[in-house]
Length: 273
Picture 1 (tube, rainbow, N blue to C red):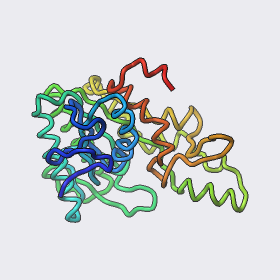
Picture 2 (picture 1 turned 90 degrees about the vertical axis):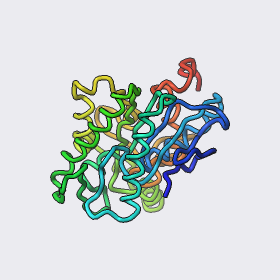
Picture 3 (picture 1 turned 120 degrees about the horizontal axis):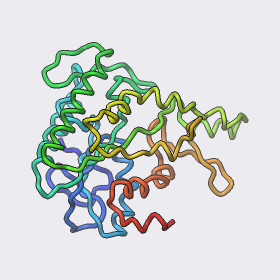
């Protein structure tokens, strides 16, 4: 079993390389399918600037020793490989930056919209109580950060996207066919903050002041609501492919901003369209 990105241009063991072919890299992004979406958006910007980046991507949280109760074979393999690759990257002196990206609330709470409940445990814990999931995740996350800090890595955590109980493309299509108001698809920003309260509190802990948070919600929320669609050339278009993954249009709207916040693109590109 290997962890991979759909944007992989080269492969080095379980690390895929995106961006420019044949270039060395000092940054690795670890994550789940959300990281995979970002990788697809990063590809053109990295390639254009002759930059490469490593990715280790699978269907589990990018933290060490964090696993579902009674995991499937693929869940167990993903968790084991993610822990292994984080340890390898932390010991690699050629790697300066580590990026962590995921649908964080899923691993914290053990559910997403339209999914069954799952309990998670950290290390040797025997947790089977879903109410303990936040505590188990917090231990795994802090242990991961401590490992990376101990080895002198710059750490970037991509903050959560807003998640929706509906599928924006289908919801917009129904409005187009049957009538309705697109405003009904807006989500109160308080729902976003409540869903992601645990992670945001962790990131604000004093001992994590050296961890860099990468804000993506600013592109999809204001102080009142979050939106799953945008206006483009006079049309309303979805920004998501389902309730929690950006589509190509959505990721294109944030990819450059993320890379600039991480420091992977020249800062003069702030002035470029």
